[in-house]
Image (cartoon, rainbow, N blue to C red; front, top):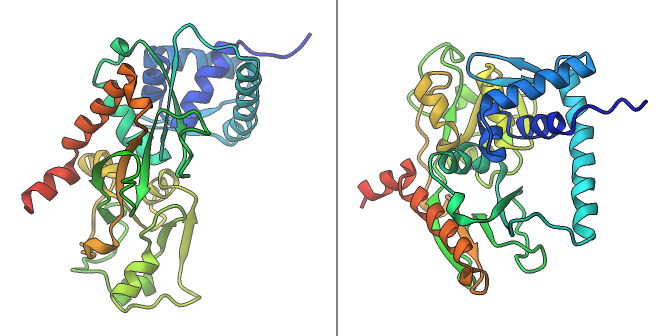
Length: 307
């Protein structure tokens, strides 16, 4: 007899592991967080291993959970691709939107959870990527793109600039620093994120500071991992303020000093589509909803105050 757990448990586990949140997984799957937790508990009982460390405010994959997710996610993707190749689709037409991973988890999904998207009458597939996917070749309806280009050759609208700030655990620094300086670089660990256009090296170059080969440095693939490392007290991360607004408000992270960079070095987020896709009513509604979300984003409110 095959050792195959209930497929629902697998789907709920994959969503929770990918989004690192029972709440966000519940929003994506249109169920309650309790249902997510129940199915994952069933999966853990079936496997006989603990997959998540559950805290009061967050969840974290165990070593077994990481191993299981790395294989399950590939299997589910293969199943989806095999189904798509046969031309089989769900009852509702599917809408695809590509979003940078950290922005999807920390900004878009929480906003979607606060509004009703049932009237769209479409199922939504999120593709978490920073790559500039071709909308026509990848069958995408919408994409949020990150960079310096305004994509004027497409149906494009500016959402907000990226306001990068340093963050660390409240007790990480041994003393207060009025600004970023050489002493900080020499004595503390700087946390890098590979996929950010503005990094510590650019900041150091702008302020004529130097990082020697022996200085402590941690590098992660995405902001989600860099933020978690900062929360754990591993160093000072340089991240988008939007992505850590919750952690700053609840005190898990602090901004220890200010860094002011020129606007020319500040990338932005743009929502893009094509004229053909925007003729679809549901795509247009989701497009307008995302634009509306951006107007309530702290970065935009701050920029308005500046004039």
